[in-house]
Image 1 (spheres, rainbow, N blue to C red):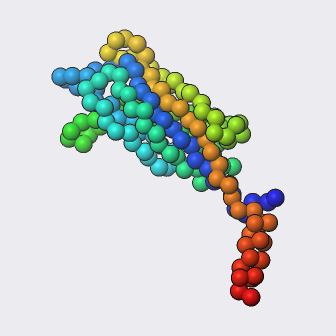
Image 2: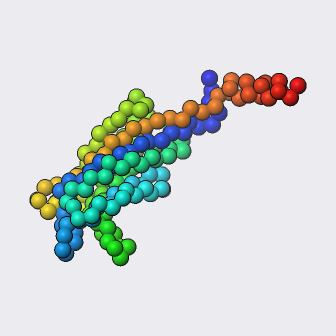
Image 3: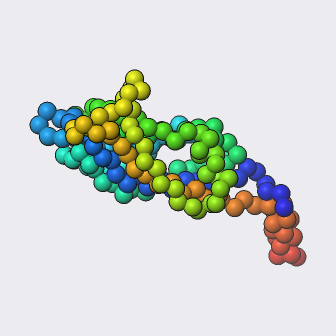
Length: 166
């Protein structure tokens, strides 16, 4: 059966935790905030204050407007040190490349995949934490497709509507 329009989907991302964050504040540790960016939309976690190992376990749903084009965009992950004055300091960046996003929809839909990514600074160097270990972010991804209307269903709806009118 032919679908009417492109297939849509979404990716449920659970931002679990970060480990080995560097000291970002003069008096304290780090006030961690994670921002995901996909298809030109940004999604933020809550702030976890005064910790080198923030735990979020926060689910964020990313909309995928056309599954066939899911591999056109990376999933960008940015970890910031939140500041009360509204100016966030970048801790580090990571990403899931476009081809990995595309392969999520080619595999078993609904399958959860774990990701452990090392953060890089703006120059592409590893971010080293307060404890001299590489900084990392842990998250899971779980893709789903929305079932689209098929031509057969559309024809049935038209027939049903005609029957109701008569």
